[in-house]
Length: 171
Image 1: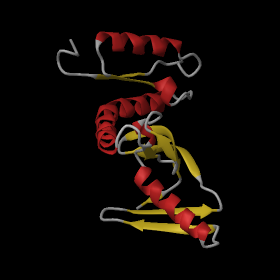
Image 2 (image 1 turned 90 degrees about the vertical axis):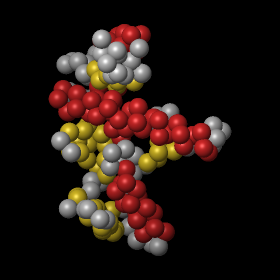
Image 3 (image 1 turned 60 degrees about the vertical axis):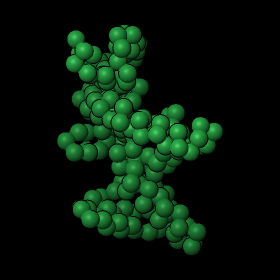
């Protein structure tokens, strides 16, 4: 019935899947067999004991997957399948399109600014910097002390995400 109403994505978050993800995999496979295009599982995305943040992370990922995958597929078509396409993560690094999960890129813009500032500073011989990135609606501030500082749970809108991200304060 859900497929007939146009729902094509699903999020699966079972209570103890952080210990044993087998049941989530079975449910995901059944959903794919039924015709769901995108299925996110919490144990694959955030295999941690905290069920509610794990479930929220899974729902956000499932919701964004078709949109972001379509965007990346469009770019791949334009640059050619043989081109190496990488995505920026909220942790300030790059990941392949094949390893891409939307939950890892929600704070990628500010993280890119911190990564870029750190690279420029290091090339100039500085290992300790403060970054200040002011845009139209917010200002992002971070500290680089020879290495990046991370947080592993953050709020994006009303959702809590379990995903590594650079420690950036937004005003």
